Amino acid sequence: MDEYVKRLGHVLDVEPKYSDLIYIERIPRPRERKLSIPETEINMLDFLALYGCELQFVVGEKNSIMGRVMQPLNNLRYELRFIEAARVCLAEIDNDNLRQKVSEAIETKQQSLPLIIWNATWGTDEIARLMSLSNGLYQPEQSQHEISTYSNDINYLNSVVRKLQAGDYADDLNYVGDIQQRWQYGSRAGQLHNSVRLLASRLDDATQILKQRIHQKTLCPQGQPNNKAKIVESVFFNVYIANVQPYLSSVNRGAEQLFKPLAELADIQQHVMPDSFRPYYDQSLRWDNDKGLWSKYQQQVKAHTEAWQDLLEQCGLRPTPD
Figure (cartoon, rainbow, N blue to C red):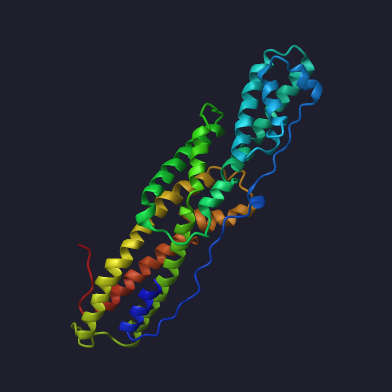
């Protein structure tokens, strides 16, 4: 894109100016994304009294060394197993005091479940990898198939989250684990962010060149194409239309496929979204925010197209849709 700005400035006799890349919110650090979960303790006497109940095995696994360092998705699995096992166990408990404690534990865990779901989606290391800005620009020829897969995956994840929120715990979370594993192999969302940030900034730089030429010196004083106009028109078709626009289209397509379901994954959990995450959601995820990254990008694409049309119109060369 720097080369496009440079070439446009050269052909229009305008000195190009390269602005700083527009600001982008990065995904918050782990401690700013993860929510604190209230502990539900079952003491040793109560634990022993659960003998014969599946719940005893579930609690025992959590109290093991491995259970104490569970990853967020495994913790969600545990909480769902606890709730299901505790419900079954209630019918087998004769002791009123123990039954009351188990009932209270079920209620507490159900109330905490939205927090645990958040941690198992937006609180994971895997999603941070997907959103990382550290791996360059989006390469459509390498990533297009992956973007389609990620889009389908996240739509599936959204359906799982909605079911869990509705109290339907029947879905197997193993596939969710597979989804999150795929996120670790490429920062496709972050690459799209990088590309959109670069495109929005450099398109604006190029638009300023076009506008400066439009207002300072008419390209075709007689309103008819001249040699200069033909050179400019060649840049429009052979550089902007042939090279820049296809990349814009690929980024548009990839971003819409990936970020609409990602925004939904955050949107359906807004009731527990930490305040520290909201600027990232508003600026970098939401597709419908007029002040967000995606709207700024679309505005720059539109402004650049209109500037080209206005310049070429001075020579009777204004492009029209086919």
